[in-house]
Image 1 (tube, rainbow, N blue to C red):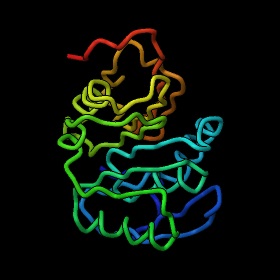
Image 2 (cartoon, rainbow, N blue to C red):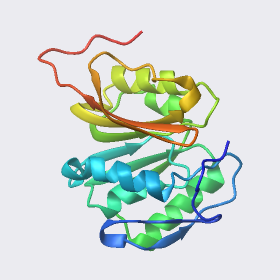
Image 3 (tube, helix red, strand yellow):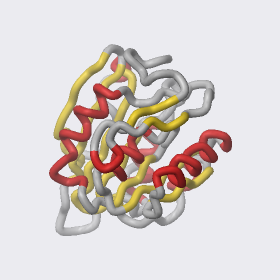
Image 4 (tube, one colour):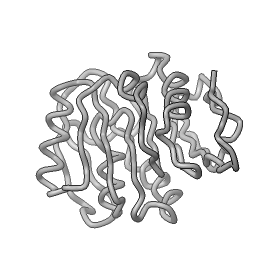
Length: 200
């Protein structure tokens, strides 16, 4: 499914920060849906108070629209996970073009990667392929394997038809909007005094 008002075919545009206005190539890959400029502008307005010096994880990087935007807005680091080799290679090239030394691309299956012990991230982007049933498992692995800082912000982009995504009770819905058939939500993971129970 293609999103409405998607970015121009073959490229993305960074909309804010140090690389504002830069256009970067995106390979023609089936199912690749760059998050639209309109959605990104709203999302990064939400994230603005927390973005500088944040450690970010882009779970399904694709075009890199989210991870690269975060880096442009002075995130401390970004890890971009991408399964398709050609897409991951283009992400590497785009990082080199931008001279972004505080980021890395991992050519991997996201669920396999997240199943290992992680390091805490302040901001996490989850924009999985639609209709693949990957969202719930992604959330579970992030929560259970140490990928999230206590007060992490987690962005989830999903189909409107699926309703609210399955998230732990201590993930509080912070912001929510709908664009066409796509819902996008920002959750705040509340810090607790003791270790969170594992999510089944």
